Image 1 (cartoon, one colour):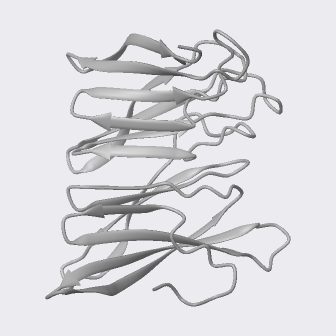
Image 2 (spheres, one colour):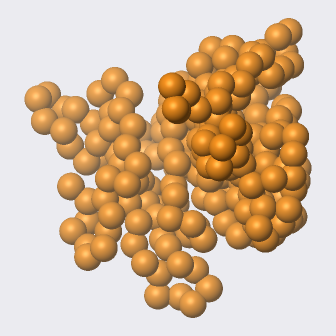
Length: 220
């Protein structure tokens, strides 16, 4: 269970990995400057029961979305914001306690409504982070920022873009597995208004390249 608070929204985002379950929750902030406060609850299956073993306070976000992903002992939590979004990385220390190990910010994070951290996914030592932007407020191409782990630390490796300053929602949803990545653009107007599409990328010799685009099949 969560903390039993009113309007906690426990279960807004969930992932499961082996005998671990991660659940996000959101409460309203008392501050006029911050809308939401977030936490991630960690459950482990001990014997035959699921037991809450940790609550990780993530902080605030200007958006109601709090994406989470887990791979290779690292929990990634997105915290999109109107100004400077972030992705927080957590892992266990030698005592078995969860703690913040690193904070990811993109090289381009000084524009309003960039929305970095709105979506994310990870596979092994790769993390992809959506920055779909709010084109109505800041007309520019939406992006996905790719991070890789080298020499024990995480660094920005590449940025892929929708390639057009339009409201297409590129990066609102992302997924990665092995050398393949998929990016959703649910607001794309091809072939009709808000039809939506997905863009697929492959990692070829260390560089992510677009390989295909799949438009909405409706009407079939």
